Length: 248
Image (cartoon, rainbow, N blue to C red):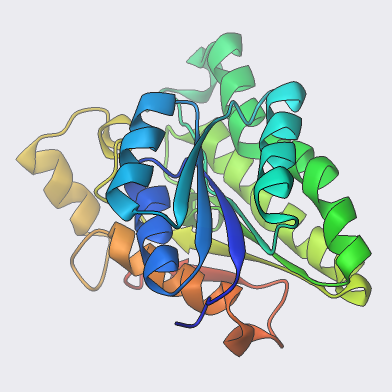
């Protein structure tokens, strides 16, 4: 029960890595808000996890929706201990000059602007209490970019730098900020990363991972639990790979 008594918002919490983090947090005693643009999936996930989980429709690229999410959490719990910025999107593998402006704007809005918007909505109340934890789900793509995922790579590099910038600024207020860098995993985004989900393409991706497997939602839940728990009270500004050795 490493998160007993804590409260957490997990964006993109209805599937993939976000669902793995939500499941682990509830198991460890945390009360969780599963915030997702797919409200139906969020409600199903919350029902599956039981009374310590609630669902919230949220579009993290829109300021009004993020503010509504933060207010709903405060109304429910009185405060927010943990924010997990997990929601993310990618464009299909494409030469950098051929990515559409619409896809570029969408990737940057969901992967980068969302971190700005959630900070504006939630950091002030964390400052008031003098405590809080923010965890940004970045990617190995921001450390060791793959070809043809160009602007997605850039958005995750931004997220890693934002994590460090937030950590050094917010540390005096008792707020820790860290990131996780997963390698490709068994999530709804996997097919988009690969372009096509075939045995040959999977083998090509797996060949770049020394441990020989993809990241799982359980891997991410375990790592997130540690970084968001009091056991990691001296850790801030870290972007930790959960990647089976891909970035070595």
